Image (cartoon, rainbow, N blue to C red):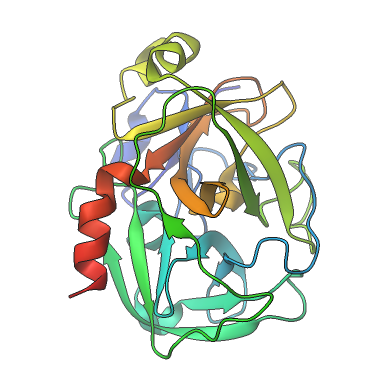
Length: 264
């Protein structure tokens, strides 16, 4: 069964036939109500293993997307997570291993979505500025922003609190998985026809064994190599973990924009 998650709350967009889904949070609309997301085939993280991770939540303390600390005042995420949100209804929890306890609530002061972003368009990247400085510690520290173009053969990592199975609740413990990058040429060949045409140079593809991969609860989380963020979870093909590539926003493409916004 082919499903597609849509980004905007406009009923007129529901007529599209692409198999592409965009893993959103509470902002996303879907063709069917039983589509849930998860890191497929991940494993439990340890406290402090991924100190950049951020759980982005509403003011009811419900997790809906991931993010990553990149400085004492800035968190990076996906625009499809934040395009309908405002600072007053968006919390950022840093330093957490578990969803139900621990971590520090960092209030949001500004949300900046890339101006090019719209469904099926480039620019699925956003910045959230904290009201107060984020205090770094053994469990809270930033990633660097990657400037180098990433091609095939890089083994990156993603950590997030997306669901661990279609019928499961969000996992209480942070999950993580390694991701292998492939060239965009190979990615084009592996994607279904209509969805392959969405692929652009400003995206990075990864591929895993069937039963592994990203899905909707992990949107906005960073694909990172060492301590450098190289991509942001953006979109993929339903069903998650079905062997198709996962697609990330390429951070190097937007490096200049990110730095300009952070310095403004």
